Image (cartoon, rainbow, N blue to C red; front, side, top):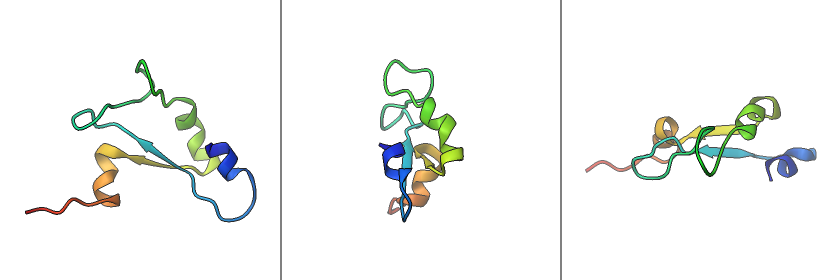
Length: 67
């Protein structure tokens, strides 16, 4: 889907949400039984895909209101 989205010219946005925080969700990366993120991680920089890391970046993307 990322390849298809960014194949043609014109405005495009391709983002990978990298689930690295196993506390609230399931973390996935290169060495997991399902949801491996190996090929996309390798290709992201050269293809201009944005990678958002749940554990370290998500507060910046979607801040949680503090009481």
